[in-house]
Every structure is written in structure tokens, then in C-alpha cells.
Length: 332
Image 1: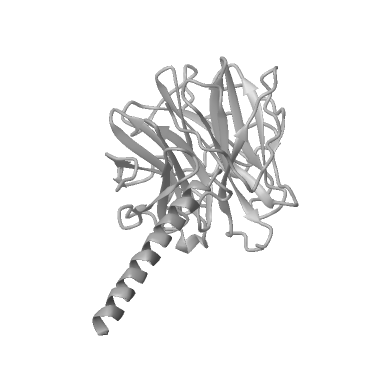
Image 2: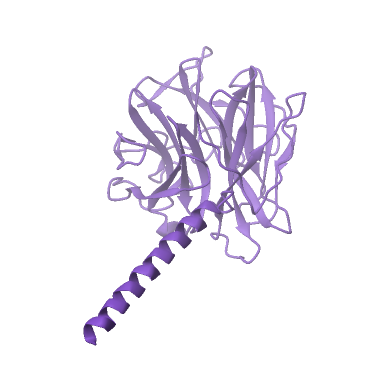
């Protein structure tokens, strides 16, 4: 009798496991879009890039400054299913960083991955902190401190050294950065240890457009340079993204319009973004953070993705923020 009961129990258990497996597979197949946010947890200031045929997102861990002491990353081959890579770097590897590890930016050069970051939220030239660099052999890390000190540690042209973006054009790597309503651009040297002066002898050139606050981004489309930034206050509902178009990475840049902002029916505080282009196509996506309608804590921000479109004249259309996110897009 006991053997019969045991057989029935085992058979029932096997059927239950099979049901769970089928249900899980069906659930995965039912995921038609990424959904927004793309990952669980509080994440902001996302840097989105493509390495090979994989999409990567590197955000700020959105928490009180003293808790912002590490970075996680997320990868996907289709923009819908994301894998978390925990703790790709932290203050154990960055000895001079104490807090406010912010807004990562990453680039690949000669088989190495260079992760730029802001740290310590310095308020003057006497405090230790600013923009640093970490390096790894893999986009998932682990990253180690590249310089052992900040790359930029002073307030130059009234720009706080935060929110760096790395832009490559015609073989030259540029760093574009700045908070407090001011933005600088500089040419990085070949090994990312310093800078190359512009023709007029300037090292840090101001390219601040009207209403700029922070979070610069640059990309090139059809021969034109699109310069984007965030405006408003990062804890408020007026946080938003605007842009300009220029003929070179140094502009001049005249503000055109706002293209990303809150939708009071979906989320508030939409801003501090990045942009990716599917290689070989004119398909574009914007990855940004926003605050759920249920949240009032300034640090409760989530990372989201939506499509970015242009009109026939090359102007960026206003982004419609969604709860659905985007459909699968595999890089061919």
C-alpha cells in the first residue's frame, strides 16, 4: 500500500513539475514587449550602448548619496529580456570614491572597456572627487580603477564635473560633461589619461545651450550632430530632455525643442537619457529614467525604453512614453 501511495505521489510531483515548466515557457513566450521599466529596482541616468550584437544599459543605482557606492549593468540580445550583472564595480575598487557614484558612460577601445563615472558630488575645487575612469576586459566587468584618481577634479567653466558622455567622431574621442547648468567638451588623449588642446589652445570648451542643466548626450545622423541634455529639477515633475543640431561636435548648438517629458497618466520626471541606433538601420531608441506615479521619493526612479522617431526634416519627434516599452529587436 505504501509503495502504491509513493508511486502516486511521485507521478503527481512529476506532473506538477511538467505543468510549471510549460507555464513558465508559455509565460516567456507571452512577453511581446519589454514593458517599462525594463528591470526591477531603482535605477536612473541610464547609459545605453551596443557591443557586438548585445544591448547594454549602465544606470546609476538610485539611492541616497551615501548608498550610491556601486554599479549594476543589464544586457539583452532583443531589448525585451534583460539579464542583470550585479556589482560590476564598487568603492572597494575605487579607493578615492566615498559616495554619489553617478551616471556611468562607457566606451570600447582596443579590446578594453572604459567606464567613466562621476563621484563624491564635489561642490568646490578643494574637495576630492569628480570624473573618474575604470577599465575591464569584459563589458560585464569586473572593472578596476584606471587612474587611481579623478580624470577631472575641478570646476571648469562653472561646470560641476559630473554626467560625462563619451563620443567618438572621426577617430577622436571626446568627453562631454557638466552639471550646474554648464556643459564642457574636451578631446581625450589616446590612452584616456588626459586631454588634447583644441586648435585655439583651449582644453575645455564650453558648449552650453539655452536651458541646459545636466545629462549631455550626442549622436550623429545623416551628417548632423544631435546634442541632447536634461532640463528642470531631477526630483521634480518638470525634468525633461531637449536638443539642438549642429555641424560639428563643438556646435554651435541652438536649442530646438523638448522631446521627452512626463505624462501625468503614466509617469513623472522623465529625463537623463541615452540613445542607441540599431546598426545598419535608421531605427532609434531612447533609454531614460522616470518616476512612477505612486512614488514621491526623489530617488525612486526606474529605467525605461521607448522608440525615437525623426520627421522628414530630421527633427526629433516628441517621445511618447509608454508602459508597454518596445517590441523585440535582434541585431542581425
